Figure (cartoon, rainbow, N blue to C red):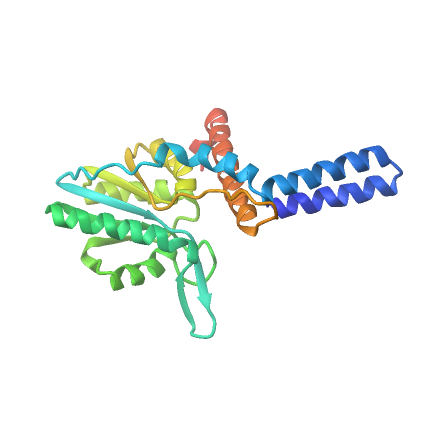
Length: 247
């Protein structure tokens, strides 16, 4: 997203220069350069990321109910062509680890614990994300009997919408929501919309890095933050216009 915007700006600079609008061309070129440096050298992600993650920085203490559901939101998958296998994306393992830690703590308490993995085939790899993640969860010691797979959701809104009937069937008295810190705010909005009062448990906490030279990580973190900001804006737009009842 960030690089696309920069490329569009460069194209506009070129068009303005060809039209002879030098002042506008130079002003836009300078703004584009400053914007790129602000993103790639760290100031922009350092401003955006805390605004999304700060409310979830401190993980809540585990206060288990007799029956608990841990909802794991998936984060993509990769098809390894050489081995013909599908596995969770590199950004997913933090979420998986956080969910397993929470599950093990719940089991030690003696409470009932169900791990609800939510995700359809959003990456078009030929398998629902929840199924892909279930294999890794099995390897980490989560038994099939304690897993429920939601295999149809294609986005965060559907994660919440399609999780609701499963949570009712489980009879969960407390719901724990596991996802990335930068994604948590939007996820909580969606789950609250469907009346699911979840306890947020962030899997990670991202930050920007101030640098005298551009860093690709800062660009990636800015992309993630902008994606969430646009998603949150869309949520409020849908709520205000009433479109949310139609999706």
